[in-house]
Image 1: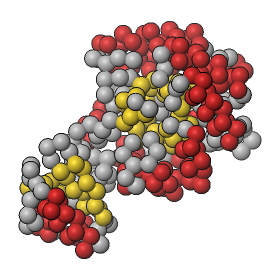
Image 2: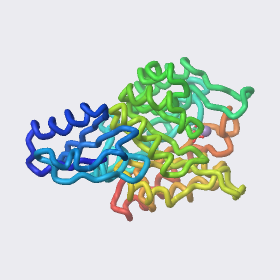
Image 3: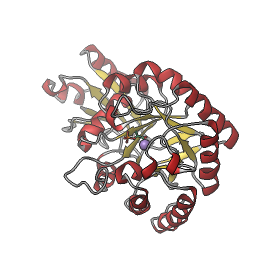
Length: 338
Ligand code: PEP
Ligand code: MN
């Protein structure tokens, strides 16, 4: 349930709504907008409650029910678009934030070279997996803590914030010590213990779409992060399973527009995992920017032939440099920049 306060409401009136909700055993979250305060009333049984419970309170303008399963991620709760700041880099505004680097951190030499290249080409955030969620237990699982240490070294050397995946709720605080953004992988989109831990950590987070999840399920998973009062949440479309098998996954380009319509959260696109092949990545990346994505997450490897993970979909430094040039003109044509 959403309680919209009158413009110019006083703190005591907001307090009155919060107290009433708490007395009924319900949770609350406030959106202190520039001209209006909105109070979300949260709980499993708000459906049984009359809207009059809050409509009668002083300072209340309107009470509405959010009919969708997700609440905090919805535009009903927050009509203005959210901006996320990573070391001064704004995500969700006019800048297309390009996050690039290898699928996995493999060695110091590989990561430093990748960082140097992506920075030189204009990427603003370095990616690299230290903990890898692999389909097979026999595949390379990542360098784990050593990988995090290498990311921290690359961050220091190249002055770039880093994004890396957390796969275990018990690792969240450790990963957050090294990384500027935590990534929740597609396979973990509904790992609710992980989402709750990241929500509590208040660390900026990129929530990838589960490859078998609807947009509604994805936004409802985002509510787990937002419920922990972590408002630095970025969504990432990375392709879903369809009957089509000429790409690794089918990039759901329409989800960008759907997210923009129904949610205030920024959304980026990972063309690499959708494509599965380096030759398809540039077209998908350009389409994403044209469709309104706030950023891109792209796999780049200094030597894809030698990559331990996802070499086939990783761009070479020269392919990435070319793509960045092309992306600049697409960004400009939609009123943005890289
Ligand atoms: C990744 O970004 O390396 C990754 C594993 O992606 P996804 O979770 O989208 O498969
Ligand atoms: Mn990968």
